[in-house]
Length: 133
Length: 251
Ligand code: SF4
Ligand code: FES
Figure 1 (cartoon, each protein chain N blue to C red):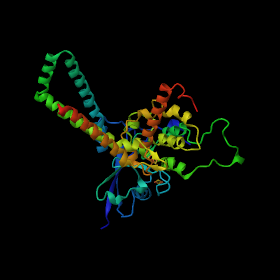
Figure 2: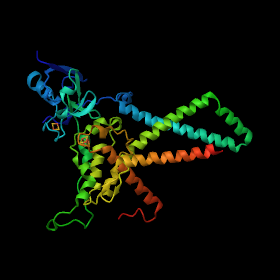
Figure 3: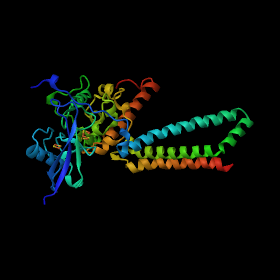
Figure 4: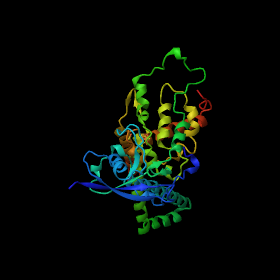
């Protein structure tokens, strides 16, 4: 036998663009990236609350700012990413949550469906609270 | 005229060259040929120096895994007709060092398989003597882990995993699925021992859930699902230990 010293295994480099090589990798990166936008929005929301704490004038100014086209675009972009993030994760929930009732496995569709249902109910609740005023 | 097809094959011969290159071969096209048949044809009729692994030709031994047009496949189960008339590019499985041509170095994988203790472990004093007979199990208990026991160690899931390609310390899909297979076996009591590796930084937490491992798996093992379920139970462990004073006790 040749022995290990004679072997020179070749290590293939991983290109920085590996995530562009397959559709599924790309969609994965978008899903991960989406969380940055969700986080950015949380920071923004904290800022709005902070302004609220500084009194009515500061808050009014903030509301004025919110009407600017740039911020409307920001909201739309964040919304798109948040929806994508939620949908991709909800679709993955059946893989994570494997439940048995007795000996029967709860169907995957039901698990994902329950998440969508909860999402719908919560959204409706939020919409009701805001639009009621 | 006989129909033919071109195969572009990754060549690396460490005794002759430092860099790999691609070599193109033309083979007859047959409806019932798989990529492995074409490679065997090359070896037998055109170029005997080509090296690769194979054995069963029926999707059981798990040794013929290669990248076919960039996707990890069992070449004995990948038909030429699905690619005809285009050229097919065949490369060794990504994520692993290449020994020669299409042969990868799999020491790391074998080491990881062994590391997660893939056998039934019983607690001290709870091992039955041979005369005691086998540990019994109901069909429902078998169902809990059966899927994870179908793995043929073909490593396609590792080749599909960008996390493993970027960082070889990751325990990886098949090894974690195998750990899950024993953890969920009603006869086994060794989960705590496996957790040392599974719940470590190189274990389940390295996984970012790309999910490609489950897509390429030829045996529907769903290693991605196994890893996420393992994350859930490790998280529950953690809460038990931190929140309930007596919860962390080893049963
Ligand atoms: S989990 Fe599937 S892809 Fe991975 S080694 Fe086992 S059979 Fe192959
Ligand atoms: S040759 Fe055995 S799995 Fe392909």
